[in-house]
Length: 280
Length: 280
Image (cartoon, rainbow over all chains, first blue to last red; front, side, top):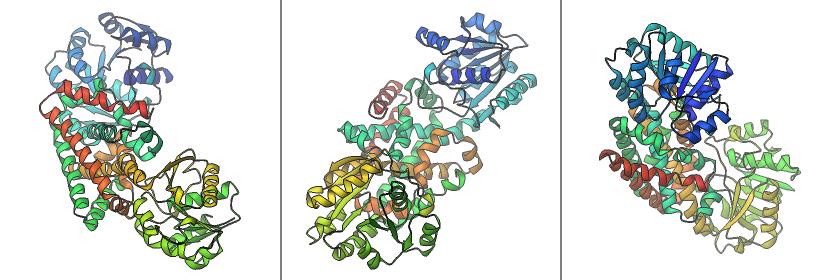
């Protein structure tokens, strides 16, 4: 199988390494707008060659679109225009409704499978890629009823080999649930970093005193705006809804502390501790 | 050296294991209010024996008070009442001003060194203890000018052996800086857990979709209220101050997203990314 990967960052690069590790591909072709990233991807062996978009699409059995979600909406329709009946196209983006709307009714819609491998790190670019990123995680397949059965089967087989756990959702549910358990974490982490950078002017003190707890909550604040602003934009209403709930919860904790209601504060923390049952 | 550890939880238990690992102690005596924890601490080999408070204090060269910070303020003064001129007492608490005020002017104040090893996990109790918890982390020594030089030297030697990096702060500075880089992280994590538990009623979905990013930001929400409510209480004004800044930053991000100011949102995320320079 020849695979073309459009966008050789953390996600596209890691998938390339994983596919190669399992011997699922004979040839890996990369398409990459940044010449520096293209060169680095070749040096790191993420792909065998770099090609231009139209040629790379034509030559592939499977095309993986792994660009930020704003570029995805622009790139996917012309890619679908160009594919033949034996080819399969997937995305790997963190939002789905806008993308699915962009290809709804497309004559080649059946060749496309909407995919979200639920894994990432705070790093980006080809250097950040590693073959194990997705292993053991969940991959969400969206609205598979609108994809051709053979295309869905190929994608299922591919992600089972990674290996990942397959989950099926419709696009609207996907965007709602990921706002809760992924997108909001990034907002709170960005805000936490801004808070500490604003309040703690002595950078050496942050370095000295940052313990594991702080580092793990602030880690996501290192994530790239080029990845996350388009995600927040496409999932804006869901993110605003969860963010309002989060502000409400924070304000409630603040009020309990301000009026020294330590019984109430204890109850809220006990309630928060329930997350332990779900994520042991 | 005989060491008495009052409170055999994560912190006291981990310190016991570390001291034993380095062969710094001949005998470890535990004092523990919970008989279940006392029994478990013996089974796990955290201490050689359990004794009552007054006997355990009398027999020790070094006494480590490792109870929650509200109990600390009550326990430390009578412990100091009982010590002789050759004995040393330390605490290992996350707040310092209230404790330092509680022993200010005590006739044996010189035998006490205020210590905060900056390490922890979201788990608690003797089962959570492990010898490596503190290794390579920072330990803060507070207001050492009010401790006898030989007591400070013993404590320095002990924590250098762990090994930890020593940092000297006054109690007020300690409480201010730890509000920024430790206490606020716990508040945001508790609020995040409450948000997700409130919004996402399908617990299986949380489990399925929680990726590494969410797990790392919500991890601290598993922490025990018995530990953290007393910390928030003793450091209330600093925590409220940082929390207000955090609410302000979150509200700012919310407003930028609500009015679709993606340039402004990008700038804020770039600003948050500066945390990368401080915590690489």
